[in-house]
Structures are given as C-alpha cells and as structure tokens.
Length: 99
Length: 247
Image (cartoon, rainbow over all chains, first blue to last red):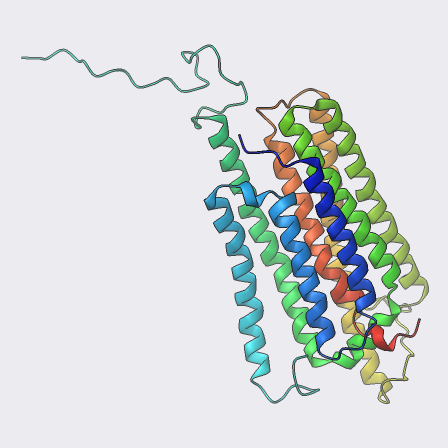
C-alpha cells in the first residue's frame, strides 16, 4: 500500500495553515491597493496546495489521480481566465476596470 | 482430427466460489488486487470532486465579475461581516482537517480505537463550524442584512457613496453572494458530518482493517475539499476593504 506520512508532518502542515490564517487576517488591514487581493489569494492558494498535497495525500497518489486533480484546477483557471479576459477587454464596466 | 485442449483454464475471479481460500472479503471480483480497487475508488472520488469544483467555480466566477463591477460597494459592505468569526471558523475547519487526516492515517495503520476517536473529533469541529455559522446568520438577520426577504434588508451606510439607492442595490448583490456561497458550503458541511457519522458507525462495527479503509479515505477527500472551499471564501467574503474598516 501507499506510504503513510508521519504524525509530525500532519501537525507541521496544520501549524503552517493556522499561521497563514493569522497572517492573512492581519495583512488584510494593511493598505496595499490592488495588491491586497493578490496577497490574500496567494496565501489561500498556498494553503490549498498544502491541503491537497499532504492532507489529501495527492503527493503519494498514482499519476492518473494527480492528472485528474490538476485537470480540475486547469478547468477552473480556464473558466475564470476566459471570463476575466472578456471583461477586462471591454470599456463599459461601471467603475472602469477589474480590480 | 481434434487436438486435446492444452490451454490452462482462465483464472478464477477473486470473490467467486472457486477462488483461492485466502483473499480479502472486501475485494470485489472485478478488481485484481486491493491496491487496484483502492486506486479506482480514489480516482472516482476525484472525478466527483471535479464536478464540485465546477459547481463552486461558477459561483466564484460570478463573484469575480460583480466584484470587478462594484469594487467600492463590495469593499465597504464587507465591513458588515465579522472577520473574527470568519477567522475562528477557518481555524476550526483546519483543526477538523488535521483530525480527519490523522483519522485516515489511523485507518491505514489499522488503529481502530484511534480512528473512532479522531472521527468523533472531526464531527465535533464540523458541528462547531456550523454553530458559528448559525450565530453569524442570526447576527445578519438581527441587523437586517438579509437580502431578498421583505423587512430584512436595510442598508443605510452612505458614507462611501452619495447615491444611496443604487449603492444599497450593489451591497445587496454582495450579501446574495455571501448567503449563497456560505449557504452551499454549509450544506456541504452538513453532508460531511453525516458522512463522518456513517463512517464512525462502520468503524464501530469493525468494517475496516489495515487492508480495507477505502470509505475512510474517500470521505476524507470530501472533507478536505470542503475545507479548501472555505479557505477561499474566507478572504473573498470577509477580508475585502478592511483597510477602511468601520468596526
């Protein structure tokens, strides 16, 4: 069967996730203009990768499962990206632009 | 002239009567090995999770469009949500994900007692999350911040926007997103708690061992997925426009 990660690994991931939650909570109070959302989403993406790779154990899964997991995120990027391109390239947005 | 058939007979299926005496009773006949059966179940669960990504992805996409249309309204409306509750709930869900991951680990190692305790911890934190969510919804109800329900939508914050009527409509859109996205997430949490109760009952009956723990594993995948959705909902709904916070 698959290799079983140690308790220490799981606890370290949990600790990192909790610290990132505290960081994102306080960083959101700092005025960074357009960068607030970028930083918030980068932290969320980092947290997601930790959960997917370690907690969901995709790191140790078969290549086929990895491909399927990646396909989900690829599809999501297509959806959000294509729609964003459409809206960014138009001039009729009420307040001018995407954030 | 006929030649005698020398080719060996096809191998017996793993759970047919003619099969070899020692095989795991949980191995279905259409799989060769326990490992193949496990990998197939995991892959099937991922396919289901892909449909879930599409389900939530549509809502995230709509959110993206409306937030880009009305950034000011979204930013100051977010101040009516309590980021402390959101942060606490994020921490609660992360703890539940840890106990879930440890439960799957215990199942893999065949530690039945630890598996049951860790499942109970997961259920506890799942219910704690739903409890906090209920408190939040109640606060919005009392504050008259529930859109689409007559008598429960009163938006009188006008300090950022002179055009009050238009601004109130834009704020209503964010609250619609808030209730639909957190609502669907909460429904997934309720389903998750139900799943965990089922897995707990199965564990108590001794259905799992170190060779067969597939239901624990795939329910764990579902639980972690619901956690990931919240990881994105938290910054997108609670943490926008906090630099000009009212609270």
